[in-house]
Amino acid sequence: MKAHSILSGASCALLALTGVLTGFQGLAQKPFEQEYLIRFSTTVSLLQQKFIYEGLRSQDPDALVWINPNEQNTLVRVHTPLDKNLLQASVDPSGLVIDYLGPVHGDQQQLKSVLESSEQELPQYKDTGDHGNDNARYETVKKAWIETHPVQYDQLNQPH
Image 1: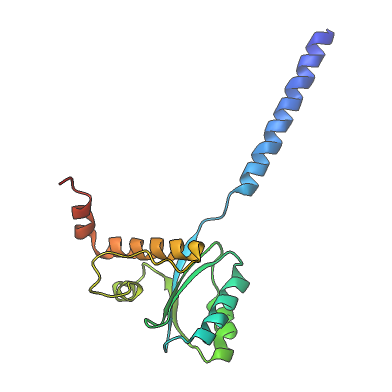
Image 2: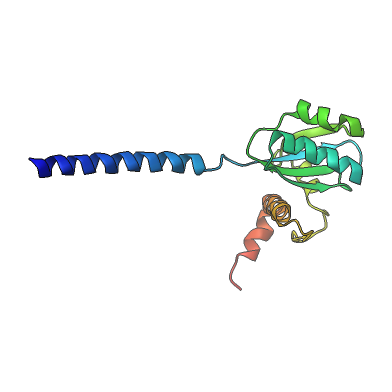
């Protein structure tokens, strides 16, 4: 009888431990990532970039941000939905006006502006020293290029 109760106690303890570990595993997973394209009405100066970073990071401290000042846009990868009004309030003191804040995949014309040049054959990785943002920017630009150039992408994957 004693052996049966020890086995039952061990089984209960094992089940409880499994439940606790499963709960921690669920907590450790990051939420779904979202990518946004933000277009501004004018080119973005170096000083204005600070306002963009601060506004985005106030909504998601782990936001990955790539600003292309000449193209008047910003690519961002976040784990929470962005609030355009909050971001506009953050960049207002710098004089920036947000023309568009939405999915990267929303409009083919906007996807073209995501690429550094419409004549560019393939996206290029640019090392600025900030590997997290560099990788995020490259992945976003690469994904946009694949969506706008499906035939060329298929040709790249064909055996030669």
